Image (spheres, rainbow, N blue to C red):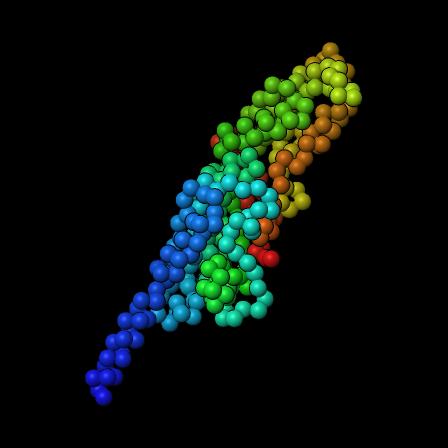
Length: 273
C-alpha cells in the first residue's frame, strides 16, 4: 500500500508539473499567429505550474505583435477574442500588456502602440474549448503610442492632397505642424484658382478617440483677398485627421504631443464587448 501511495504521489507530481503556463502560452501563441495578419506574434505567460494553471490564475500576460495591418472597427474581428457574462469557470490574469510595433492603421504607420490593463477575468473552460480568449471583464487601462515624423508627414501630406491642397509639404515643430502648399478653389468641380499658403496648425484630442488639427496662423498670397476665417474653415472641414476605432478597446485620448521626431499619444481605455 505504501508503494502504491508513493507511486500515486509521484504520478500526481509529474502531472501537475506538466500543467505549466508555458504550455498554455504556446497554444495561445499558435492561435494568434493563425488569426492575425502580422509578421510576428510573441506571447509570454507568467504564473505558477500545477493547480494555479489548472485554475486559470496567472500573474502576467505579454503579447507583442509586429507588422499588423488593420482598419477601424476591425480589431475585434482579427483578435481571437469574444466576451461572455456567463463563464463556465472563471480565470484571472493580474496584468496584461499588449505591444503593437510597426502597425499600419488605415495608411497611418504607427511605430509603437502599448496597452496595459490589470485584473483581466476570462472563462478558462470556454477559452480551452473554443481555442480563443473568452473574456468576462477587464479593468480600465492605459495606452501610449508613438508615430515617427516621416510617417505623420507622409500621412498628412496625402490627406491634404485628397482635400484640395496641391504640392503639400509637412514639417513637424515643437508643439505644432507646418503645412505648405497651394489650396485649390473650385466651382462646380471646375478649378478657379490656386492660393499659395503657409500655415501653422496644432494637433489636439477631440471626441475621445479622434485627433483634430486647428489653424494657429497662416500666410497667404496677398494678390488674392480672402474673407476672414476662410483658411480656418478649410482646416476645420478636414477634421478628424484620425479616428482610432480600436474595438474592443474603447479609447479616450488624453494628450497629443508633437515634436520634430514625431507624435506621442497618451490615452486611457476600457475593454468591453
